[in-house]
Every structure is written in structure tokens, then in C-alpha cells.
Length: 445
Image (cartoon, rainbow, N blue to C red):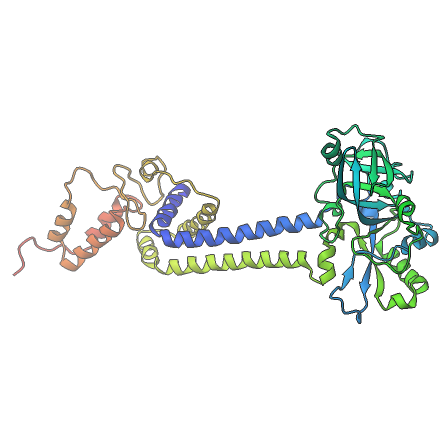
């Protein structure tokens, strides 16, 4: 019964090609958008999960003052003076680190090129468990040390065994490579933040920036650059709510009054949200919007599918009536239409078209059919066992001779619609015909 209903569903799809194309394409597009939307949301919400300490790391940001009018609601960075204060006053935190992005002319051997450089506190390498090909997490302890990634080493040196190689900044300041690490995956805020102009390729110590530019290691309250991050790693016993309360106190006690006109408060966010900094800046919840829109598109596709299926069902009332007349139960009809509704979504991912004659020649039998001598195809995909020994038209001529014209037309019409579909046993047709009044074979005057 199941496979017979599948055959009928495939026939209906082939018969109504335009309807099937619209329904399948609409549902396919809706499902595709929903799946891709889900993948995008999952990608954005799973950044940096490969770092062991990710659940314990938080970033410190700033909220723009309402009267600032710069078109930015929230920034992923804060003043560089905040990190030393956190480290000095909050003894319970495990580590604090800052990053400052700059671009320099680097000279490696005979080649010179401009490269974005991240200057960082040494504690950064304690927070993030990078995979070292050479050196270790103490690489930034030396003010002249330099950490580079595997791809950067291969690009400029052709190999990864480059520890001790000298790199010159602006043809003036020399650094030596103290560590080489594997490339950080793309689904990390180090590489995916659109607001950061320095990819994670070359990392130098902040002490080196102080050596080159007299950069104040204590930070200052006059520079607020987007993309310069401040990280705080907490013990497992503390959470972001505790840190937020502490940052509120630091804001009240230490932020100068003139800077309070620039930032309204200091914010705390889990590390996994760091890659969404651009959307936070403009106040657009992009991930939630994508998730909602993809779901609404799927709902619209399902509603469209349902409406089209309902519209088509109105044209099949004649088929349903004939099936019920022939003895089909409500359960059989329900199963048939449920199977047809499942065949359509299967067509979304591709349904192989089987040769109809091969399917009809199989040994699977519809419960409403008991004979398999000769199988035919009808308007509604119904099956009949027409006696092969009778010449074409014999049954019709016999019907017209034996019964009144309106009865014979009814029987012949049913035969045309079903191509002679039989009922539950051979006796049903004989019972129906025998119940009709026979007429004389003499010609009508």
C-alpha cells in the first residue's frame, strides 16, 4: 500500500508539472535560506570556543554617551588606563591584558613590507593557549621579542624554523622572533572582527611600543581607539556579573569627568561576543535578526506550500469521491494524502524518477486491487485488471446493449476515469452491475 501511494504521488507530480515546480522550488528556497541562516548564526555564536579559557575571559568595552552623537552606541574597547587599574585593584582576577593595533614597515632580510602589528601585554599568551611550533608563552616577556604565525613565517622566510631571526621596524628598531605559533582559526575574533585592522599575524610586546614611541605603559585617558582590546580572565568562582559591578565602581572612581562626557559607562562582555563588535557599535542585533528572518522565510515557504496543496486538493474531490464509492476507507485516504505530502518535500532534495512501467510491473499490490493480469494507468493513477482476452470496446458494447443509456454512460465513464480499476475483489463490479435493471436486447423504437 505504501509504495502504491508513492507511485500515485509521483504520477500526480508528473501530471501537474507547473504546480510541482512552484511548490518544490518555493519550499527548497525557504529551507535553504533557513539552513544557511542557522549556519551563520551558529558560526557567529561559536567563535573562540577552541581556546580552553574562553568561558573565563571577558572583554571590557564602553558605551557612548547619549549626547556624543557620533553614530556609535557601543564600542568593544576602552581607555588603555583601565587595565592597570583593574590589575591593581581587583586582586581576584587571574590575568589582565591589552592589545594595541599599529601598522609598521617591517624588514625581513632583503624584503620590506607594511604589516599590521598587535602590541600586547605578556599576559595575553597566558590567557590564550596557542599552539607553539617554536618558543613558548614567555615570548613577549622580552621587550624585543616577537611572535609570528606559521603562515607569516612561510610567506617571508619560506620555513617555520625562524627563531632568532631579526625583524626591523621602520628601518630603525630591531626585534627577534621568539615564538612561532600555528595560525589561529578564522572563527576567532582575532581574525573576524571587521573593526580591527591588524590580523593576528605579528604580535609584539607593549614594552616594545614604549621603547619605540615612548608609549605610556600605564595607559592614558585621552585615547579611545576601536579595536584596541582589554581582556580580563576570571577564576571559575567568579562571573561576568561580578566583574560588571567592579567596573561600575572603577568608572565612578577613576574615569575623569571630561571623559564621562564621552563614555557613559564601562561594559563587560563574554569573549564569544567579541566578533560582533561591529553590530554592537551600530546597535543592530544582527545575529537575532538573521535568525528571525530565516525562520520567517521558512514559515512563509511552509504556508505557501500548504496553500498550494490545499488549492490542488479542491480539484481532486472527484477522485476522492470515486475512491470512497469504490470502497476506500477514510484511513486509506488519509494515508494516501499523507504520503503524497511527504513525497513533495523529498522532491526538494531530489527524487529519482523511476520508470512507471517498471513500478507497475512490480509485485506490490494496492489493497484495493486483487488482480494483476493486466495493469493500466488512469487519470488519477488508479489500477485495473482488464481481461486481456476481450477485444477493445467489447466491455463497452456489452454494457450499452444490456443496460439503459444513462447507466451505461455512468459505467463507461467510470471506466474511462479509472481505466477499469477493480474493487476489493472481483465480485464488487458484478454486484454493482447485477443490481441494475437489465433491459431487453430488442431495438428501441
